[in-house]
Image (cartoon, rainbow, N blue to C red; front, side, top):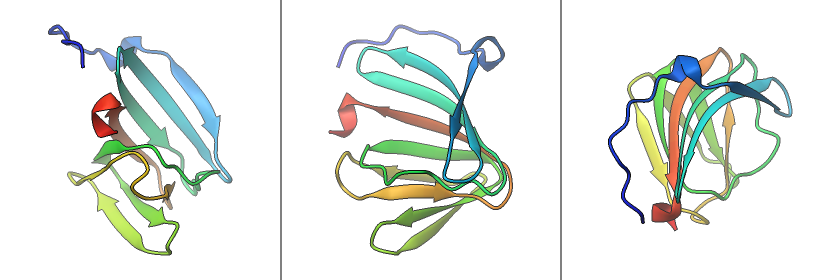
Length: 112
């Protein structure tokens, strides 16, 4: 993985992109570096992802609470201050919310 030089991320300067879920909406602010993606993601209330994700992530909950559902049917609650990690192709998962949630999500080549 290439070296990442020191840098501050001022999220107020990074544009939001809108991504519809099965229900609700996700708003992404994305910093893309070589082999590394850092996102601040906000899920609206009543958000259900529109797909089962196979990508690896480190997900840290900044505000709110979400349910990470695995395709096996298992469900895990992630609330403010909690983090989960999963490697690429290790499990199919999706996010579900009741109320608004704000997350910091990091993924990239290091999770293969």
